[in-house]
Image 1 (tube, rainbow, N blue to C red):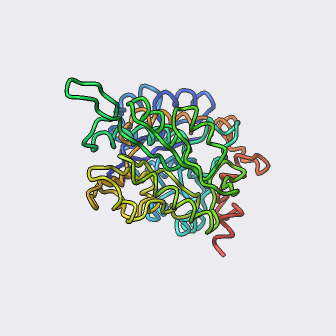
Image 2: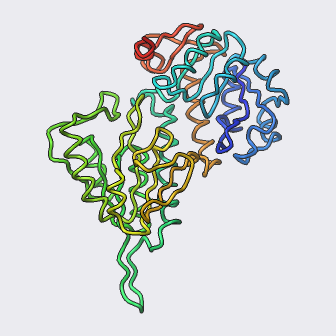
Image 3: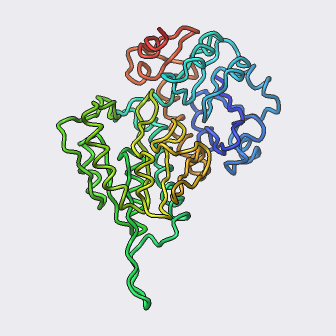
Length: 375
């Protein structure tokens, strides 16, 4: 099997999905790797390093795709890029197929098999392949550093000759992987941290990191069987908004991480809440790519509204491109070792990882939830 790695074209993207340390292990499983020239430069991996690990370097993307049995991407390809891929190849990338229906149609029309890395289930067996979790780890950590850089105040409490400086107050919305990392990073910098999540099960995790869990007085618990958040009732949303509003008002920093798979990110911070914050406060919206948890977020931009800086960055994991690429590569490597044998695919539909993540097979849309969306 030949696995190919094209250069990522998005200006904000610095990661590469396969790094040299994975190439030798893939080679031992009869999976050879070809890399488009310059694909790793922004992740600080040279073409020579790829060659030394056993990869072939290809100058022409057309020739790269022509040789591909599998194509691995950090980001979902465009419809135009899909049209350039070889019929019958397998595309492995975060596809977000429940919302990118035009992309799924293009993939099917090109007779591609596709594996959506964002659909890998959150199970014990699959955690080594979970790209979303590995990249969210980086995003949560970076979000705190971004906030600290913008905030015109200290994070820790300081005892100085000029008097005592109170610690910054941080509110984390969403206590998934990114949120928990943000809590840990903010606590290490000395902030007082509170966190909210619709899933009650995470309360213990939040408190174990030294943060206070914001409780919404309701019986509803919005956790799916796969460990993700799901849509809540209107009554819960009203109580949620009231609780969040009280805590946003006193926060110096809000880090928003809440996502619902296949849907627009829930709006948790309204314009009125932003207006209530102290001048100089900061919001880092990690849900910006899915239209944001803050009503005033501008995806890809840093804006100031009502004296509050709102960061809608789209390149957060890329800011630590070396480790982000290393973690992404290890996830992809483990996936390939799971779904191949002796350099050939073993896409068993009875396998829970395959069943959850395979979107198209030989040009047919096979994922039940995606098929339902198409109707």
